[in-house]
Amino acid sequence: MEDVEDEPIDVLMESDTENITEFVNVVEDETSGGMGYKCLRWVCYLSMKKICITSTKKYAYAVGFPVKKRNSKKGEDGVLRYLTLTCSREGRLNGNTSSSLKPQPTVKMGCKARIAASLDILGNWRINAVHLEYNHETSPSKFRLYRCNRTLTAHVKKKLEVNDLARIPLHKSYNFAVVEAGGYENMTCIEKDCWNYVERVRQLRLGEGDAVAIQSYFSRMQAQYNRCRLVYKEFDDVVTFDTTYLTNKYDLPFAPFVGVNHHGQSTLLGCGLLSNEDTETFVWLFRTWLQCMYGEAPQAIITDQDRAMQNAIEIVFPKTKHRWCLWHILKKLLEKFGYHVDKGLIFGAIHELVYDSQLEQEFEEGWMAMINTYSLQQNNWLSGLYENRGRWVPCFLKITFWVGMSTTQRSESMNAFLDGYVHSKTLLKQFVEQYESALRNKVEKELQADFKSFSQMIPCATQFEMEEQFRSVYTISKFREVKEDFTGKIYYNVISTSEGSSKTTYNVRETIMYGGRCKRKNCVVSFVRNNCEVVCSCHLFEFRGILCRHTIVVLDLNNVTCIPDRYILRRWRRDVRRAHTRVPVNYAGLETTPA
Image (cartoon, rainbow, N blue to C red; front, side):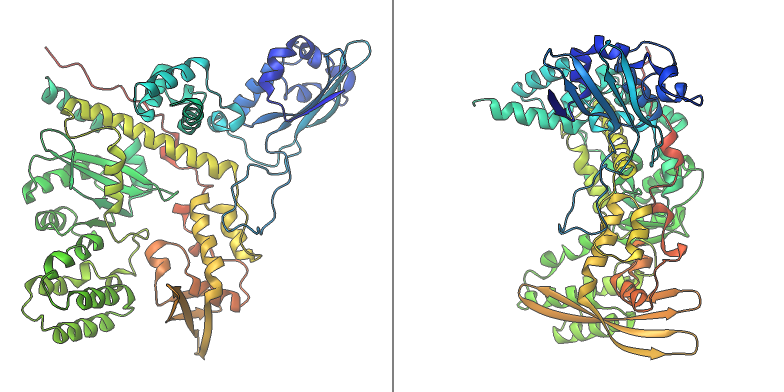
């Protein structure tokens, strides 16, 4: 007899449909206690029907779990004699530790749900075993993303090959397939599958109404598009705003409002096309965007040093914390001091002050010492930076939540993302059409990340119960950051302790290795045992929303095994049902230009 392990179900559908049709015609005789209908839940929607294995996948699609053929046997005559179907999340779940520094996520959850049947000598199918309980959640909306349900049709494959020969970018080919299918929800594959297929094919291969249309489009989008509003309602804590990206041949700056979602991905919260970059224009844009967002100003915003932009923020968002992009400031050092005989020393001194100063006084004293050392008292640019040090120096801003950001890189990455859709010769009407395509792609990327965090888990790096606590609730991308803190904990040591009346203070030393050199820096951590409150002088938790290694060392030292809820942020959790994920993505495109 032939024994085939994990053969794709589709192969069975093509070759053994007639045999499997009889697979379900055995319910009442083979089960007891009213279990007949439940048994058929795995195979079909309605009991007592003779349906082939296709119904298994149809039902799995409706309920939201993946199915695979675990094993099967055929007789010498080629007739299928035995078949076992299982949930694809069947299999041993990896332990909490792994020898790999970057272990791959796994869908295996040890699920026992299965159904097994065999063909008897009379040619009748009999159910041998049924286990109906799942040990994981199910989700019909995510079912199409499971690997076992993804496939490239012959039509899509042909289109990909022809377009690749014509040097059409793959993302455009995929977007065409999405449009042709009537939306992402009707696709039987994801963009990664297309990439993989094209790569395999390559290996085998040898060798005017713009203004009216846009005004109509934006008016309609302001009124109808609720998803961005709901995303903003969930992630309104930090927004980056940047206007350095010129989108089209009219040189109109594209100004995106960008946030960060629960996976750490950039998410678009709105945008504008500006003909001017003065205070009046920015005030108009901010007020219009604020009106779209139900009048709720962001808690914090990151921009460059543009004075007009700063004035507008003070007018429209007076209570919003505003910081300047650190990268934009530091990149100007070469421009401002390229002529100076001590430019290298000045660069090094400024970088050290910016990144190593833990206290405001420490920065201020170091800055004055640098100014005096290199006789920079008359440098107006440095004087302006010092006067506004509360807008860009990390030690002045670290107690505010910035989602771990100190630059407008999110806006720039959004610009880079749009590079695949627009170019310098793009017309305005074409721009908004491509903008929709890019936005839809962003939504799909978030859905795929949701799916991974829903269906997969990565092993912990240690045996600490605290790490397991984060793994159970955080999205995969955020847990990876937590995991790095637990693995990096070995470079941190408590070197002194001071007992107070209500709290204990710990001096934690960090050893930093780089370029064969060793550098040490200290942080002070206070711990209140009664309520398990922990605060570190680095304030990394306040800045990025994930506990720092200094605090993990102290918590471990105090035998803390369960992290208080206040240190597990809702915005990073994978088990939160967020309103924007339940909004159908519906884009009607540009309206026809009125006659």
